[in-house]
Image (cartoon, rainbow, N blue to C red; front, top):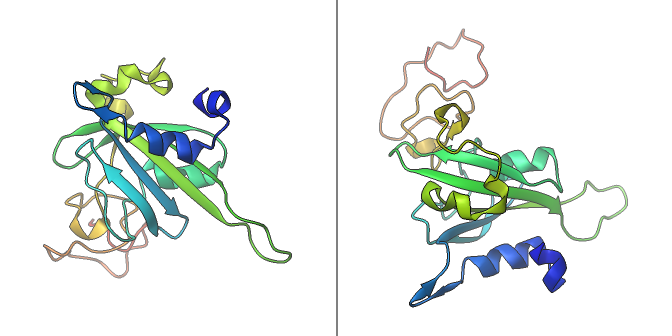
Length: 178
């Protein structure tokens, strides 16, 4: 609605929402993330308290990456961090730049979210049971510092512990403990 009303892009609207913090008239404290499909973070703001890595390697379970599977759609997610904090997030991927003949299309994804306590103020949470623990997606900041040993999408081993891996095991990730 805001995109059409102000004739602007999804990125511009979501970026602006993170800046609505006038003293005495604060808006929802959002976080914002812009990334490419390789995980390179080009913009990030966090007023919600969520930790966003400075460089690539963010959690692949985060909806900002899942959005690449269906560009143009809004992907809502209830994200549960290892520290117990829960966030309501939306993400949308879209084609960026000019397509060149013979080259693959280029996409970016924008993520916007807030602490779960503010989720009811957002249109995209309508119809979701925000108290239903089964709807929570366990995510982390990045694989290297994530304590979730059972994650099927772990891309790197954690830096703080040694995993006991079975090289003959063929799972979804070589870093999943058995």
